[in-house]
Image (tube, rainbow, N blue to C red):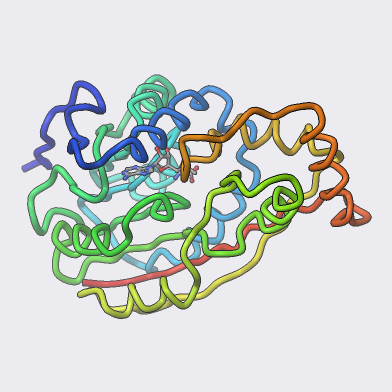
Length: 274
Ligand SMILES: C[S@@+](CC[C@H](N)C(=O)[O-])C[C@H]1O[C@@H](n2cnc3c(N)ncnc32)[C@H](O)[C@@H]1O
């Protein structure tokens, strides 16, 4: 018997009215970047390679879910790793789901949906995986939903981002104005508290910083845009004037290292079990 998925036509169908502009912005930003995402996703691929190491050894899952699957390259990896399993990739962004479906039509099912309100029956999955997606969500709601749809004994493996991510960019912007120009994520200790208070058993929870380098601010912004990681915390970003750009560049230059302008991500990894 397969997994039953409620069908979705567009984001309006699975986002509550209360869910807001925030989720619509997340879905829209990532959807717009679907075609450019994979070629810019060097940090995301590095993180996913580490998250894969947390997959429990020796399991033979029947049903696997990739939460916040984006363009689907990790869903395709899960399909290759567990060839006998039914694999579902779920994402909030219809643009991402359409793109994933066009790239990887064989062997997966794709589902547009919200991981805070999963369209699956309880006790459905043996394994749930999520790389760099739950940081966009209310993690308490996500852990409740994961606990509900995992089978007893099933595992959840994830990577996420914590406070301090893109600190260099945030701090350079502070020299320009007081606007919200970078996405802010909750702290490692707050995320630890949430996982420990969830109904899931925590087998592993750790963090590791990753730094990328860029020759210039222009190349850094180009990559963030290609990834769809535009600011979603606030709707009003304000116009970038030549004067603001100059101040920002000067402020960022203070961080320059031998390899270039650094951009640091505080990555959190976990493995949990029902
Ligand atoms: C940085 S991308 C990561 C994609 C992929 N997992 C990877 O490793 O490259 C984050 C993805 O999470 C999705 N996302 C954000 N909030 C979500 C939610 N509430 N439910 C489902 N997907 C969500 C976004 O649409 C986006 O495709």
